[in-house]
Amino acid sequence: MSQINLNNSKNTRPTLVSFFHGIGGMSKGAADFEKLYATDMWDVAERAFHLNHCEGLFDNYDFSLDSMNAKRIFNAINSNPNPNPGISYRKGMIDCVVSGSPCPGMSSVNPNRSAFNFKNMLMHKQIRLAGMQGLGAKTAWFEQVPGFLDKPMRALRNEVLAVLDSQTDYNYELQVLNALDYGSFQSRDRVTIIMVRKDVGEPSLPKPQPINLSKQALGAVLPYIEAFRYVKNLTPKTAYNNYINTMTASGDGLQVFDGKTWRGVTSVERQKLSHLEGYDLSAFTDAECTRLMGNMVQIPFAEAIMRHIRLNILGK
Image (cartoon, rainbow, N blue to C red; front, side, top):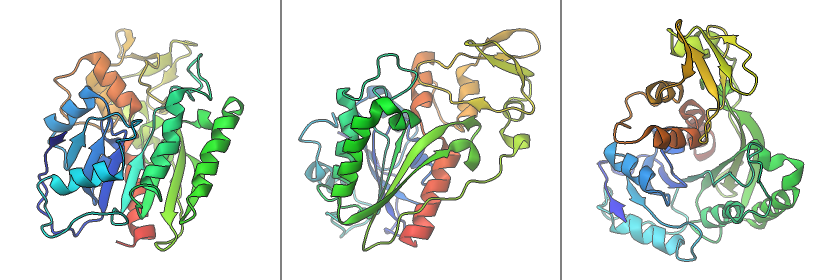
């Protein structure tokens, strides 16, 4: 387990724990939260965390193991150099948990998806570990691909809803939101679940905002790109008044026309389209960058969700 904490606050910010951290899109949207702990079983994610001096500690560990539990998390937080002397974190004290469990078993673009993929079960555990059987967090935000709502996922969906219902100290709200409606450069639908402890308040979600093509169109982000298309149909669209679809971890088939030739997007362009300008990914291969950014929650979307949780639910 590796440790780093550059924060010198006196616990004036609400606290955050992140599961399935990846490149940290959900945490990056939580600028006003104190990041205590992040976990992911992925060396690339851990390297990115340290290379960019992220706040808190990173625990590279298998989330599916029984030993990934509240005791492990609190021991890690409390043994890390503490920016808040005298505070020993325990059940009920964490303000928010954010988590987006692996989606390959549910994704509609996966020809081998199955409701019985073992990784799907991590959706159950993230709820229990954030809630009554684990950290007892005040709030939690869970994110998943819209394929979770498809007919083939009915058995899984019923199980997950049953787990949510079993958290009797909590209420929850589930909606499909699109990151584009919150300032993202990508049209990216996501199942969004907000879970709130009953003594804290009621779950709710931020309202979508009008799309602004002068800022969100592909040509607004990459002014030298004139058009774009997707390998599946090759129908071009002008870059100046159209936005792109989800950029995926497995390769989205996006091609751009730069005035000279059709080509794929570069890692640097992918960073801009993922709101990650200034984030250091120089130590990673193109394939690693594509996976890191394809898996991430879009930062403007995360900012809207986390701001809403802080102000409208936690009241901080």
